[in-house]
Image (cartoon, rainbow, N blue to C red; front, side, top):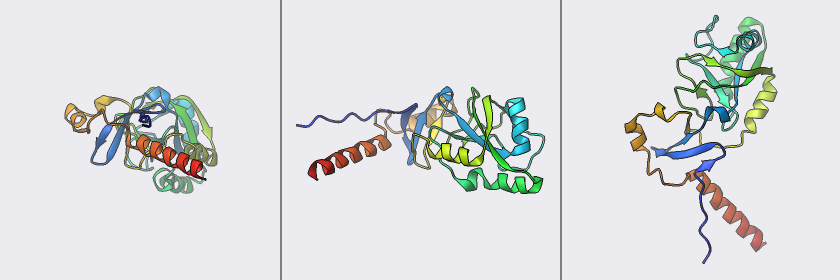
Length: 196
């Protein structure tokens, strides 16, 4: 009899909480993440100097209302989400698009998704922000170590969900389905190697 493989409930710094309507929920400490925020060069200089991403910056007009950035732990580059509106603004300003890499202790009031993390309606304090070029930022995002489904959600604070929402998550003792798939793929790969 072969030993049963244990499926981890953690994927790096992410802890699997459960699923609801096909959305997998994970919990992560904000201190374990780094982020990329795309903006125009003049705005990037102001942001780095102030060490804040402002909900109401002096110049409006880029994207949705709120503060957003891409996780370097589980993020994925979606140009239509992260770059298109910034590129349009850069053309209007006659400037370049750049990125800011940073950490923060400001906990998002919303979910993180692979395409972006939203902090809701609050300013975000930046720790060690630095301006990098777009190519380097995209490269860093593409090397994110944790690959999630596009509908998966990362919480940085369980209180984002109310008690009713938490109770809706499927049995919290279930293993992480992505980890299950990865474990199954390792078993198949091992079998194929042994067979060849």
